[in-house]
Every structure is written in C-alpha cells, then in structure tokens.
Length: 125
Image (cartoon, rainbow, N blue to C red; front, side):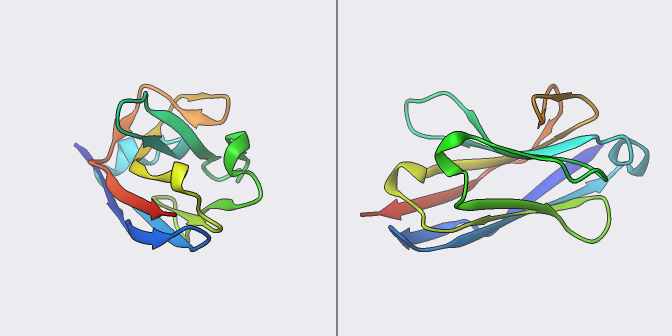
C-alpha cells in the first residue's frame, strides 16, 4: 500500500504564492519503483489536467504552458517527496491539486499511478 500525503493548499490573492508538498509513504519497494511524480489540477466542472511533472532521480521537469515561468517543481532530499512552488498565482489557478506518482511516465507526467486525496487552492482576484 502506498499513500501520497499532500499539504500546503490555501487561499491567496492574485499575484501571491503558495507551496504544495507531497510525500509518499508505505510500501518502500513500490515507492522505489517510481519514475515520475507530478501535480494535477481539477477545477469545478473541468477535467483534471497536468500542471507539473518531474522524473525521479533525473530531475527532468515538465510544465503546462500556462504555468511556465511561475511554477517550479522539485524533488526534496530523498526519493519520496516533491514540492510545487507556485508564484504569481492567477484566479484560473484555483482548484483541487492532486499529487500523483507512478512507475510509468508519459510526456513527463506519471500515468496509471497512485493519487493523493487533493488539496484546495483558491486564488481571488
């Protein structure tokens, strides 16, 4: 069993910053197989979309165009924790942010992997 624990959501005014963290815990063998971790966002009435992804160990990153230059994803010390620093947030960045991790990657994002429960981000104009 693998659990992804997210933290760091909240409310902020447009132009502000938030930092999200995701830590994997549980089955060490499965965690050690992770090749990608990432963050996805789900806004009300919209499909879940990839925001930022990172390859584990290699550090290669992927970002959706709308957040490039404002968001930074990085892997913390050790294999099982990632952080998403979000600067100059915009109202359209509001939604539920989900952490994901997988042994399979597609276009720099984890696919068919584990999901966290999500953390809320609200950006007011």
